[in-house]
Amino acid sequence: MSKDNNQLVVETEFPVRYAETDAMGIVHHASYLVYFEVGRCQFMRDIGSDYAHIEADGCRLPVTELKVRLVGSLSFGERVKIRTWVEENRSRQLTFAYEVIHPDTGAILVSGFTKHVWTDKHGNVIRAPKYWSSLLEKLPN
Amino acid sequence: MSKDNNQLVVETEFPVRYAETDAMGIVHHASYLVYFEVGRCQFMRDIGSDYAHIEADGCRLPVTELKVRLVGSLSFGERVKIRTWVEENRSRQLTFAYEVIHPDTGAILVSGFTKHVWTDKHGNVIRAPKYWSSLLEKLPN
Amino acid sequence: MSKDNNQLVVETEFPVRYAETDAMGIVHHASYLVYFEVGRCQFMRDIGSDYAHIEADGCRLPVTELKVRLVGSLSFGERVKIRTWVEENRSRQLTFAYEVIHPDTGAILVSGFTKHVWTDKHGNVIRAPKYWSSLLEKLPN
Amino acid sequence: MSKDNNQLVVETEFPVRYAETDAMGIVHHASYLVYFEVGRCQFMRDIGSDYAHIEADGCRLPVTELKVRLVGSLSFGERVKIRTWVEENRSRQLTFAYEVIHPDTGAILVSGFTKHVWTDKHGNVIRAPKYWSSLLEKLPN
Image (tube, rainbow over all chains, first blue to last red; front, side, top):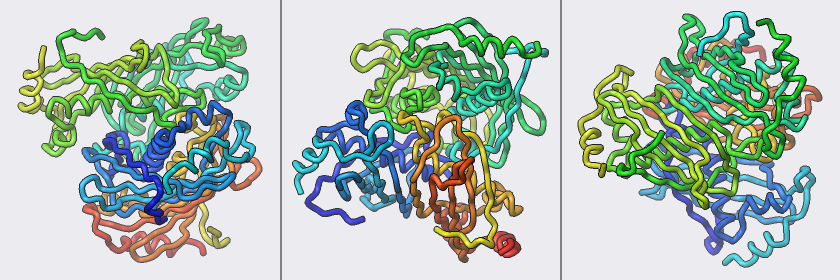
């Protein structure tokens, strides 16, 4: 998971929620997938799209594969700072990559990716909507 | 919230999940609403219904009001034991009540209710489906 | 649940997360308690406190009672706008009240309160920390 | 992720919770990590251990890496049937693997693994507790 330095990386930041912690006193590992989702949706809005609109247009983008590496952790009282970028954009598949970094030191705490497939609302695989491809082509890379 | 001793009370039991705990080391208060939902769905299946079928029939039963009192707590390693019953069954509204009890002592740890309204899939208020009323009428009370 | 117009009301706004929705297509009712928590923590930070510091000082503020009324709903693609204020501040108890309003119309979608008790880290009821009381006294009301 | 046919595979089964679904009408991908956790904890209890006891003994087993492949989905009204086994047991690391299968057809819907490291309660890496190793050695493989 290495990102091309020229491509768009969206940063999103928000506080850890108490409900996301567990009895170990840190953010539960499953919560990072929700953080990834927050980063992914912000990325979409930043390039002029919105997953809500994508769904309204009859498209879905379910997750088909995901991976997370956890080398550090976050606790309540800290802020989530997450970097999101498109790792791979194919005609029917889309892969986002993520890094959750320490807000102060910039150290990578958690990293990962989610692989998605474009489908219609019945779950049939389709090609990416044209506006999506054109939005991504406009990105600086 | 006192239940008529003659009516059907369904007990459901399952382990606390680690993800449901928080940094206080106990089950997060919002998780009890999910436990209530588990109890409510089990109640429905026990009387011969199933919320999945209710939805397939085009009906919805969204929550319009809820209340929870927490006098004790649960930790990971303990089991959730929850009692569910119908508190009030009206033509358009339905109220379930719940008690989470200590699996060993029977002491009430958490109690509450959820009030629901019957709607169609567009959110318009409707009368309870006939089979629901007939199922409830058959209950021993 | 009516608020004195002179007291501090903190507004917090953030997007609905996809993970918070359910198969009904709207935000699951339990998620509003997490939203309330986000509003409560923001309120604390805004008056110069922080629940993370409160815990670091050995105090806890568990929920003892909660109530939610749901007259509307939120969907993915919409923003959560939540108003939080202190409904009652007693020596050992604290009650926060909340309103989730429609970001555009201002209509109240969901309202509720959470009642808390001050405890030490072993769960013994204590008096509110002095700095908490002094912070609240400084508020404009 | 292929399992040795001779080793212990624990099956756990429970209903999908409504709160675990999302607006796509299916179980949200992050919920499968919670299902994995349920399977893992059941596995531990089945071999005579309990993660609650492990924590009481001062040990922790945080997740350091995880991977999930989703080729099918589950909806509310269906049951989660999950198979859990130990993929790798090393002195300081432990890897569990999982398969969520269709309760009727046995088709694999979701598979994955979670890699863990043994730590003390301060997060320092330690060797696996002796009783853990001896429990695993007793397993039929």
